[in-house]
Length: 80
Image (cartoon, one colour):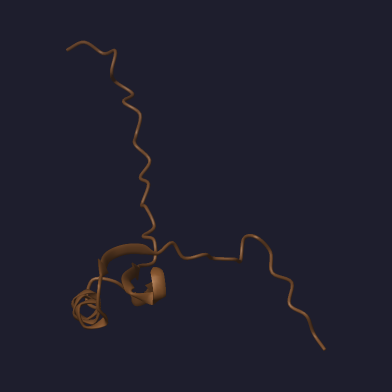
């Protein structure tokens, strides 16, 4: 039996954003369907007392930032 060793660099955790909180599933399902175009994953979580609250949560993969290196101004002390 092979065991896969997972390092900290390989683990990716998702940070879910709560988009809305509703009192019934139907309203939460409408919001979930609206958000499918904007986010990669959307889910409905049930919670609260007796499961009476429905939270719509959304997640998208973080975008990589393109860092451009600026050129140093070589001629900044030159007078014209």
